[in-house]
Image 1 (spheres, rainbow over the protein chains, first blue to last red):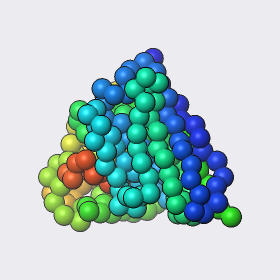
Image 2 (spheres, each protein chain N blue to C red):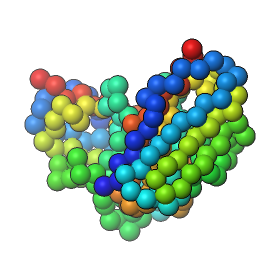
Image 3 (spheres, rainbow over the protein chains, first blue to last red):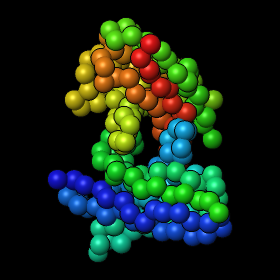
Length: 118
Length: 108
């Protein structure tokens, strides 16, 4: 069974750092496009970042230079390192597979809540 | 950056009625548009891809149309479980992706 489980969310002060994890089972992370999407309270979905099977990464302008997407192939896990956090980064963060269609046609995690507040 | 504008923000309808949701792109995106449904507490689910193709397992009451900058999701005959939030998403600027702001379909 394909499954994605996020962890690492929590309450963090503005300017702080947090690392989210997304543990995958039932498939190999490094063979797929993997992405993070977030949903702020009362707002819509926002694409955050994507990693190719070859390791190339891309980011939304809103997080470029502050967030870093990586993976550990031995652990079949995706990571999102978030630095210089702002109040507007408060959201539920989802990891998801992106299919060859280049849409989110596969699996999503259940999400992990990040709250940036003093 | 391609900006997707969804309208209306909220759509109030009764079960059995037809819902028409709009997604407008700030520049032409050909047919590279998808629609997702998100229920409370759940992750989004793909409904329509490449503007008009239903994803696997999606009921026939969901249909999509459009190309260029104007797209429509139609739900013909709303079921009780359809009163949730819908998003459009474009892949024209792959790998940079964008979502619309969402439309909430609520019971009138």
